[in-house]
Image (spheres, rainbow, N blue to C red):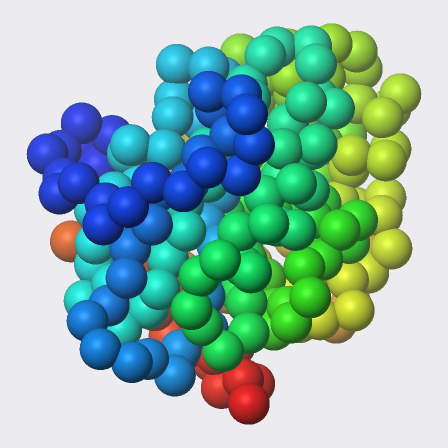
Amino acid sequence: MDRSILTRPAPEPDDILRYGELPEQVADVWLPSGETAKPLLVFIHGGFWRAKYDRTHTRNLGAALREEGWPVASLEYRRVAGEPDGYTEDIRTALSVVPERLPGTGVIVAGHSAGGHLALWAAAACPPPGLLGTVALAPVADLGAADKAAIGDGAVAEFLGSPAAQRPDLDPVSLPSPASPVTLVHGDADTGVPPGLSRSYVDTHRRARLVVLPGMAHFELIDPLSPAWPAVLAELTALSGRAG
């Protein structure tokens, strides 16, 4: 597994937008030069919901998407173990505030790993106006199964502060199917977040699509230098075609 994207130097964002008063309630903003017909991409970073992982490791992703003509907002959010409602409150607030302040024809929400979980939750629980679709990259898409498997050394129980069975309202497989399209992208060599979690989601939500990338592990999906990157771009572009 190539983890270099977590520490690789990256350019600073074009701006940092505040969506609330707390220190974590900010978003890195990447804006392409000139006008763009692409949707705003709101990205939610991962890191097993733990405080030591913040949005800075998505800055290469934001810069690469900007070069492809995408306006991007990479969200930060509170990450306090055992207080999951703080996470979801921040995502809900950000999705109600950030798109109104940035350019883009419609909105696509994307996320990676734990951020993929939050993106899938948001698609069902608080979709922003103009949501064209959701792209979840290697998401923790089934909290119950992930909790039983103790992925990330018990990351789900640490995040929730309780067994997953007590919070079906936060488990994407237990929520209603989102009204807009959902695509999950997962590497078949991902040992950190097993692809079976994404298969569980699409087995429950039959309109969702699962794209399995042979030979790809976990972090390749957010690395613009990886062989997985063209497939990620293709899925974002496919959803952007619904704009207008």
